Amino acid sequence: MSELKQTRPKGTQDFVPPDSERRRQAEATFRHLAETYGYREIITPTFEHTAVFVKSSGETSDIVTKEMYSFKDRAERDLTLRPEGTPGVVRAVLENQARMPCRLYYVGPYFRYSRPQKGRYREFGQVGVEALGEASPLTDAEVIFLGDAFFRSLGIHDCTTQVNSIGCRECRPGHRDALRNYLLERKEQLCGDCRLRIDRNPLRVFDCKVEACRQAVEGAPTPRQHLCEACKRHFEQVLADLTQRSLPYEVNDRLVRGLDYYNRTTFEYISASLGAQDSLGGGGRYDYLVEEFGGPDTPAIGFALGLDRALLAAPPAAGPARRHLAFVVWLTESELGETEKLAAKLRADGIPAQVDYDARRVKAQFKSADAAQAACCIIIGPDELAKGVYSLKDLVSGEQHEVPFDAITAAVRKRFRD
Image (cartoon, rainbow, N blue to C red; front, side, top):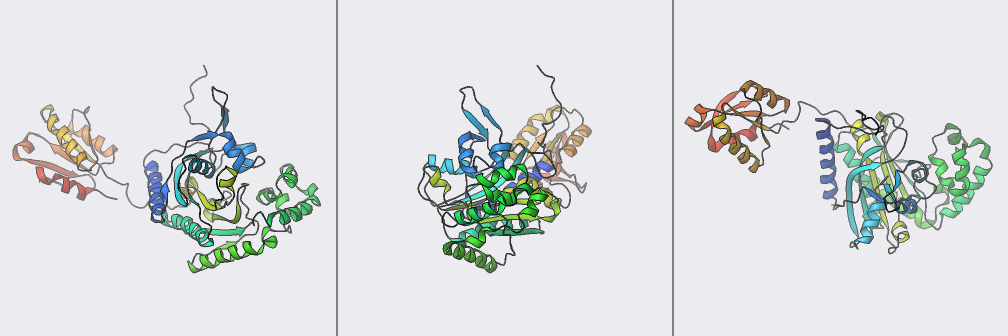
């Protein structure tokens, strides 16, 4: 057996307080915001059959060819840790025969084998929404607006929204042919991956980060130059509604997103404070994916936002650490029974409470309370019990006074600080 390693796997993170609390607060903010737009939470497995992602993301996508954590179980089934959220959501909606249209959101961990760097991890947190059964360009604009609203709720004010349209089944073939011919003439300037993409999926060349490839596609035909009339109208309405909502945006003709299932509207959120990994997340319309999974013809749009990058871009928490804990301190073993009863009462009233049963001295119990970031200590001793009061000490201000038994819950709540 190999020696036990005392470090976390490469590309993963530990979240200890207060970082874990900051992360949970961001998740709670997203949940609340999504629900105010009519989305309901969906929870899917952490791993799926590999075919779910191959079919949706595309056999030639970087996710499938380079980044998936895939394995065989003991029954020789091909399984994959989920690298993204949309395919699992679509699979779950069809398998559980969810009524459409439906609006769903998700929060959870995702996995990709990529080179770890600032803002890029092999296990990462994502939040996302999927609006299935909605075809209106106004839905596109609302979804884009929702993502921007989440970042602003975290205090990220340098977020730039980029949008594009990559067309539909009717107009994409014309652009594909024009782009392929353009790339063939410049094949020697492209990296090895992009040479393969010329025949497999030339649109992905726009996603390449190699500088030579970026220069080679500088004058390449763009999807918007080949949009059919229906796609043009759709995109014009998206932009008009974003303007109506007073959401600043940039049209980026090379924004295609790296997944096969997108069509028409694509969008991405960029933060200058993140450096090279400047994308906070993005999404797009995927009107054909449900049908490709064996379901009915169903328009849909969604996004996935990176929680780790959002927290990197967000300003640090202001002020002192959040204190929402009452620590019950006992003086002698005779008060332990009353200590347990008070802790149980506080918890029943919705107040977090803790007791240090190991510390025999009051000073040690106060040290435990401080380490636990308690807001206050409630002291129970013979004198307090005789008078029908508790001694309540505020651990921030240092003030201490007596509180009657029946008023302790209200007194403790006043000591809690957000």
